[in-house]
Length: 472
Image (tube, rainbow, N blue to C red; front, side, top):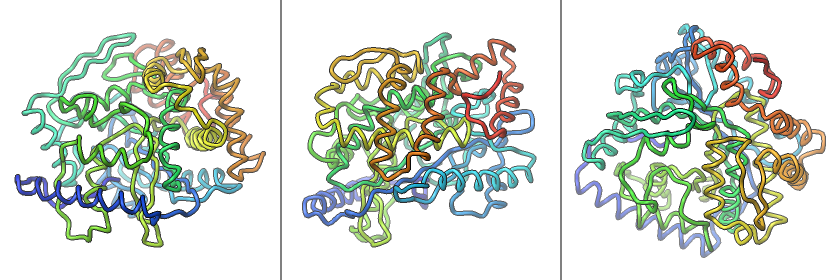
């Protein structure tokens, strides 16, 4: 979860002093990068998953405050709305058995959350966009009681001169709407993968994460409906981009795929933060410059689909993580862990074997691949290395899944474990049944009864089967 702040109103002096601290902390991070004093320790894996609280009928249940009291767990925290929560997993090193461990940890935490939700007559649900959420649900009465969220809403509207946010999403149907606050963002829940990596490798990991965003979003798509409209396979992508739009150019959009690859260093992202992005939350903190607290808070208000993060390791040194944000929540715990295995394995293999990947796939093609895959899912046709073209599904089956297997072996994952998790990805690609495809087919067969669809979806989610095995 993003850092909490102590108030939601700020003066011009607050903005100036905050910006000065961002400048100083960016200079310090750059010096640490040059001097090699950042954490050089082993790579680590982590994740966070955003979830919905729903009623028996499958409608949003705004009870996260009581739910969090029942949980009393630092790994489970609020999200923007009172019907969303975030579950965090503990970081783990890459080793045989790690994905089984991640699955066991998340499954146990999920079950505890379900018990706590039941105490408020609610249930847990992991899905990118809840098909039953209405625009009227996304109101300030349902914003979580954190100063950070109140301030975010105030500052985004300030930057927009209090003009409403505009939605315009065109696909099978066309959704056009206006909204008076940032609560549209609450409709977008994700599974975010974290890769802690030695800083000298961070720029390549960042670039490769951009390159594989297209197959990742196609394989995991789980958000085809919003406000009763049938839209992109992963409608969460345009919805999030438009939900905090501040009238910026491509060089300063708050939610963005970016404008180019990192050329020399991951510092280029933090320099862009300093130079191109107006401060949103100028909370001044009484912390030493070495904590990089203001740099990290500012970075937390720029939601790149692949976002470099600075954290503090147990040894007190700063480290670099890549946060891969393109994947929606759900459909099942098995599916999200399989997504993580595919991401880590494919990233590792491309880092080892594709030394000139950025030259072989121009950035403009990687960007077009991403949006095409978010819109059309596994049926999207994309361009790959050296101008190869084909459907995402065929690319995954013929090339990327075998590469991910090889990458997992490089990371020390045993053959049986690698096969067990990537077989889930392979079955999904072969059947073309993602969460988005299952939802579309259910509605096609049964009509737009979204509450009934959500109830059926929750039953399938509780069955401990990956989505490729779900029946309509």
